[in-house]
Length: 403
Image 1 (spheres, rainbow, N blue to C red):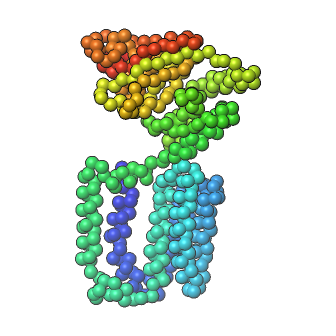
Image 2: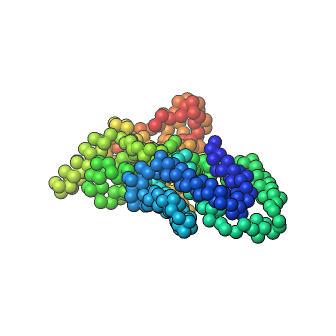
Image 3: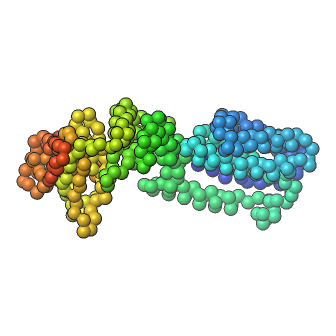
């Protein structure tokens, strides 16, 4: 578990009274030490930035992170000049704080990845700490403590009360099942590309570019997120049904793309489609499979109809809305001649099949412990296979149908 932010919070609270006391000290020697400390913070800022964000700044100049490094160098230069240049150096630090955080936000929008390395986090905090010490350095009010604490000297009582409240709140939150702090730390500690970037990575693939060229209505969308990957669906909607070109798995951390089905297979299909179009779009042989969608409940939840072509294992998907008042729970597919399995997938947890053991879900044989075998849907040109009902959910892991 990464407790970086909690540790920094504790350190800042601990040193706060000493920092305020230091700010009220107007001794020449103290001011000189503060100046060198401020320069050290700026130097650390450049070093940490070099390891954390410099490469990104050079690769993506539109993020304006290069400006952050330039301003930091100017600040150091101003601090080495006469006293009149000290205040502009501190003002620039506040401007640079905005530049840094704006640049990091821009960078995450451009790349789709949140930079959460130790070096980048360290850079952010040196920028913030630089603001504090910059104000301390240029402060000229020796009565700072009296003016803002309201008494002579410095009282630790208000600080102790604040720390006690914060610590109590943190402890209570950490004991909660859904801890806000732990959730935030987990979010910051993860490097995760966005859904938009996953889609763009898939669109860059040559076969997808060719597909979208041949199919202007083609869609590329993230369907779901599972086991560290985005499942990106490339498809078109034809006659009310989803015609899948391919599925792609995109790594959430690296953005690497891998195809669910061989690209050559899809390219051949696209070439055949292109050839047919040039010849006047001859009739494509198709048959129909239709049936009922069931679920062991009064309400059918939203899910996916999955069709597997047994010849090559190619799987097609179609979203199903679930129960709709006044609409019969049925489905229909137009498929090219061949042998298929069809099932209803509810959240990748429950699957409804068509089997001879349990065709409607009401038979006594539905409790049979023998191996379930899905019924093969044999599609023939110009014919309709009716009553291929997806109603068998009553099997166990040991005798589940193999899809």
